[in-house]
Length: 114
Length: 112
Image 1: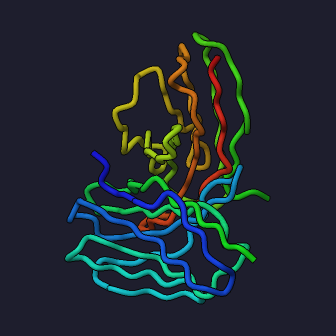
Image 2: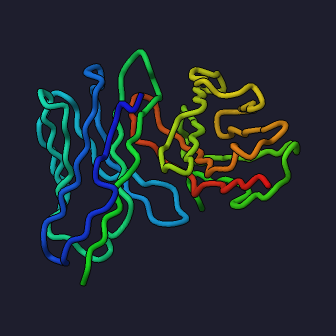
């Protein structure tokens, strides 16, 4: 019962180009979505989020798009930098009944080549 | 001055042993969590505590017992360790009404 899926285990892009990471979900009750970035031997760190009442949220080089009808979200990184190389997890949250519970995808490893 | 700190970072132990992992946060957050990342890389919630009160207990074997002595601490005790318990365990915290977690750096548990 994998409610959040990241179908691309890995992605490789050239420095300066756009990175697009995708995430699909099945539970229509999710109302908040988040992206985390994880370096080796560290815990995930929060990157950007979006509420289900929006379809886009932008923060510097990072933009998250939400398509509720398709139950799909994506993270765009423009321009990509070598320091962006990490594992990216999307997560979905359902409130208020499941307070404090985010369901995570299994991650996409992004490699940005200089 | 780590926001969420877990100890130990690495833990290698034999089957059948009992072990504990400690977690402390200095962010003043109300909610703390334990997540398990298995070999397939999924992060799965195990437990969630809000102000020392257990609010989420997923289908985790009762060999796993969390304890929250105060709002800033959430420890995980595991009895009778099994090979399948080998994983990375992450502690995390979040403030009231916000779902962005602050994670610790993880504890890699290896059961041999």
